[in-house]
Amino acid sequence: MAYTPTKKLAQRRKKIVIQRLVVVIISVICIIGSIFFIFRVENFRIQKISIVGHTSISESEIRDLVETTLAGSYGYVIPRNNTFFYPKQEILSDIQSHFLKILSVEIKRSGLQEITVSIHERSPYALWCGNSMPVFSADTVKCYFLDSEGLVYAEAPIFSNDVYMHYYGGAVSSGTVLGAYYLSTVDFKKLDQFVRTLISLGVETKDIRVYDGDVDIYLSNKTDSLPTVLRFSTAQLYTKSISAFNTFISDQTTTTTIQKYLASVEYVDFRFGNKVYSKARK
Picture 1 (cartoon, rainbow, N blue to C red):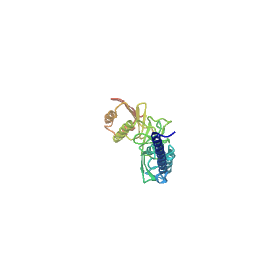
Picture 2 (spheres, rainbow, N blue to C red):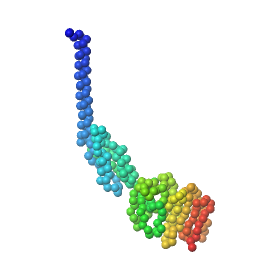
Picture 3 (tube, helix red, strand yellow):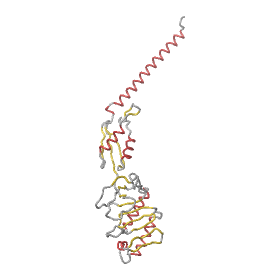
Picture 4 (cartoon, helix red, strand yellow):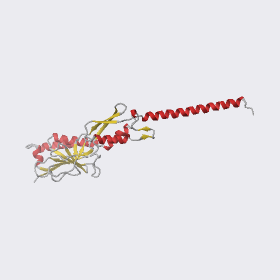
């Protein structure tokens, strides 16, 4: 049976299509292979991790964590340590979630084979020392560092004469101390400012306890007697508490100093608006 020109033309076209398809498939395989090869070339993979910044955490700990995050590949094709595709945001998140001491992290690429991790550590601002004041001032208690936002982020060493404010109680649970906030950041800053305002007015204190909506401020005690306690309510604006404190103290210190008067009482209670209650020492 003779082939017609139409059948010959159709076969030729089919052959051309098949040839082109083969060329395309080979080209795609070559391109993918080339990309696969380029991604895995050592010149484009992170070989060095530099840690900079003042930190109490060992560089090896941070570097090990980064190396763990860089291990493996994306879909068995692109290495995670490829200098153009490394998981920067994941590294940032891993470092900050693993090390509470670290406030912020920056990562920059240094050339094609190195990244630099810049560490900024939290600064100690105060101490959280448990839910209640020790019975005796000489008792040793375990304390933790608070940063300026009220976050409990690290165990504190035992100080012979520390300069930090001591906070007790608050919203910290004894079971989950690290990573907890003493109060919300806003409330902690307000309380801290309130305490420092009282100090500027002559109140000598380093110990503050928040519990059940109340704030107890324990005055520094230079004798063996129990410290004087100033008691306030968190439900009352701190500005009103300061005003009530100023009015009451002015009436009590016409012939003495604020320190002498406060040393002569067991407590002064400012929780009830214009009514202030106090108890003299026996």
